[in-house]
Image (cartoon, rainbow, N blue to C red; front, side, top):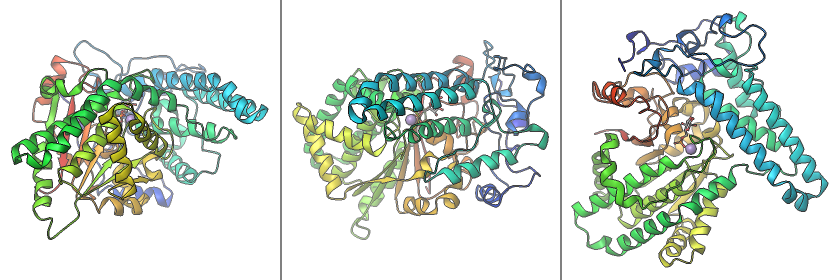
Length: 514
Ligand SMILES: O=P(O)(O)OC[C@H]1O[C@](O)(CO)[C@@H](O)[C@@H]1O
Ligand SMILES: [Mn+2]
């Protein structure tokens, strides 16, 4: 790739330089993300520079009167890949992957019809029909690029979502009409899709607590059994040896478990359109081979931070590590194994987890998934696996592990808006000595999903979001990456056009005092 054009770097395009009036909350959102606001433009499914600025492309790009969006080459500045794939990842996601996910959700509801009948009688069947019809309507709206419509139910976050929709509307010129699926920021429409999916379910009582993704999440866990056993066995062996480890050995093990947690992030089910994506081989054996794929490696900084805390434990008895979880199934096991080790190695004394309040991006962890997985691990026939489950349950009972729910994680806002939109959550995160953000979606929200230059410092891309020292642990599955060495991104692009989105590369990217 010939690098990002200077015209797209470090500009306030599309975010702060608008003159149209905004509702008060929206103006607030613009100011909290730093003055003059995050640089770089947003990813838009049918994005070119104008669309990225929130401006509609010329009407001619859409066949007049056409009921569906025709695939057209995305001539966005980001597509200068050798070999010439002219479509952005955002476009492909909204055009292909999200309808596929909706189709799978509809199919899942169909397959549970008799279960709904057994549980709720005719009402269950009627509810299933209703949910399916709402989801089909949603799929149609998306595929035909209809306007984004407000949410209609009354859930805890309905008002804030609708305010955010107004904000998106306010970014458009009067003649542009309503925000639409293919011409709005990708992060926003992708989140909106999952929120509308949830709306379809909660509008269909008595099956309003049905998680259409539960089955796939559970399947991912079961298919990864061998790796889970290997990990639990490794963890238990480590726990019994940990006291005798010297500083270097301990550091080595810490790095190993962090890398396992990183590669666990390859198992998300949204990138694969809801298809199975589990860990079938023992990941511990692959760590050395995978090292060259770590593009940013700030592990030493995590180590020095936590060892410093450990050394001053007499003065400050609590070291708290917060983990903003991503996917359930195998990835969650890797995170819990890491969390367990942090306690047994005394690198931390308390772990706080954050999950999603509603089913999200197919495989994201909800409290139900969290509890279910621990229960499964505990009930295993395998001695060491079951020991892990018992320990984990005890950590929760004794408060060494704490699970938090917050609706902010399933809002479309980038994290620099958190201190204003969810000050209670921001205050909670401020109590941590270190926050680990798992996964790609969290990275997109940390960086605002903007077209940053690859060399922009991570600290800058966070746009004022600094609740505590933090680290993103993420495999790359979206076209945003900051903090690279000069030339690094360009070299990767030249040798591997899909490097940003294929999930093969990973980062440990830290922000905090040195
Ligand atoms: O589970 P993760 O690592 O957040 O990955 C989910 C990713 O998959 C995608 O949905 C792929 O489209 C991205 O939008 C998202 O960032
Ligand atoms: Mn996820």
